[in-house]
Length: 202
Image (cartoon, rainbow, N blue to C red; front, side, top):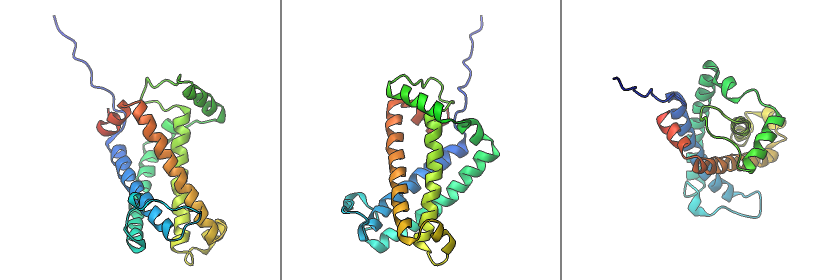
């Protein structure tokens, strides 16, 4: 009598995806925390971020951290998108997507009825969230270029409504990214095996 050997669990996240995910997470944390310190030097609104949750110590230090993380974020983002396109994962995992399916899955999620049985399948809300954060980071980079090199990118500056408008765009894009991360962490807490999958791949 022979005993059946259980088959290896299917690969959910390839190695390149796991590496780019964690590099991106590191870059985002550095950029947000240093960005809050930069914001404190010239706030747009009547509040400041607590120094304990900022990075850089002072404006010049924060700028150095911010620019270093910027290059890491851009390089890692280009690699991530290139590998997603080359492997056709971008279309398989994130498309098709429609407002009706997003709304239906959102209602199911709010009622606690959204299934997480298959970690290889992204529901419509997840697809929309990941596509949103890709576009949001792109907007962060473009508005950041205007703030960094306004004279060198006059067309981009005008497309974003000028330097001051670009500051607001950059701030709200950052807020959108922080909101995505917060929701992402809540979802991981609700479905802990997704954390194991992004570490081990299976």
